[in-house]
Amino acid sequence: MKLHIEFLEPKLPLPNPKYFIPFFIAFLLLFMLIWWNWAKAEIPFTDINCIRACIGEASSQGYQGLLAVAVGIRNRGTLQGVYGLNARHIDREPKWVWDLARKAWQESKYNRIHSATHWESIDFKKPKWAYKMKEVYRYKEHIFYEEKNQD
Image (cartoon, rainbow, N blue to C red):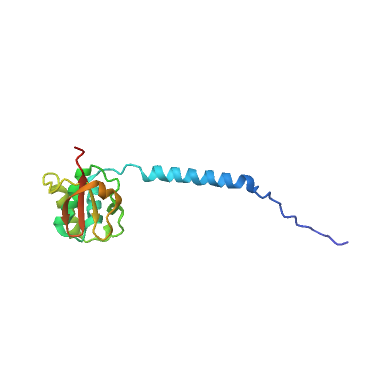
């Protein structure tokens, strides 16, 4: 007597494309909504975050460049849109750069060398938002802008 064993593979129902595509689109939209809210979350306006942002934006521009960015951050009053905050090189910068950035951040409390709230590197073409603004200051690789008067 021979024993014959058959292995049955479970047959999973394949998703019906009629339902799969709408569910996939819904999932994608939900993911995008969650990401958008996360990306727009307010970044704490702490001294350390502001110093990190200064380093990320202007570590190669000396004290005056760090001060110019620090003043721009203070004028803006938020770190929203300050891309240097997430620059990869921040934590690799030497101690003297951190010391300069701390000093610039402290001085920016009382030495407002410009009135700008936005800035851009000269390495990039002029962004769309800058056409609605007025240039108020330049230093090395940055151009600083403020909103035009609505008179």
